[in-house]
View 1 (spheres, helix red, strand yellow):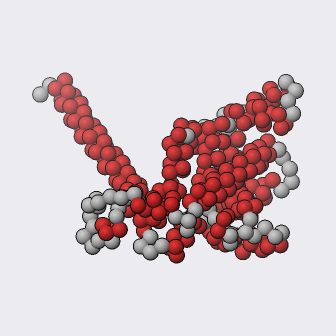
View 2 (view 1 turned 180 degrees about the vertical axis):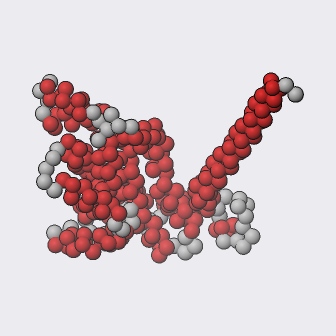
Length: 296
């Protein structure tokens, strides 16, 4: 066998090995993707199927993955029962989540900018404190926050949720914007200063437009946290007229019997706004999460 033939056989063996490796990689990728989708989407499937199943099939011992009969009676109960004012709960959740997200975003823009552009005493301590607060479990904040709200007579008000939800979401939004603002070149701001912009005008006219994707991402994360929050609302709210959707769903257990269909229907109603927002703003989410990955 000549040298040329040996070299050709060697290349052929390497090429065959590369093809097999590539095929195995693709198979592994598809299997991993399928398993991820299965574990991610199956809970939503169960929630949806339960919400449209009749009570007979829902509590049947031989119930399969797909029920034998379907119904919308659980949604009719949710929307037609005076014991579960879903419209009131929905608007309470929406107003609290929107107000909280806007407050957290505005404060985070100013705070993150100060962390990256201004040098003042205690700045390092404040930044480390934010990370520590972000790592704390929410249950550790309940008693201190409750004592403050009692002192200022804010228990059982929406203001109590505005304050506590902002406390809960602010560390995350600050951390996201802080990491991104560090990647914005200082020269952009210096050019704005030369044009006569003040510090606040530079933030509003230069930093905010440049940071739009990451601002949308921070807003969505803050909104999601406030929308789904249960612990603080269950402690600070007493009037049913102020209940948010997570608290309202809990009341179903005492208002009805055999409530799993109604609970899953209410859960679908609670989940849909978040899903729609994330699907509609997915582009900004991806850009925002990757925006600060490259410096300069």
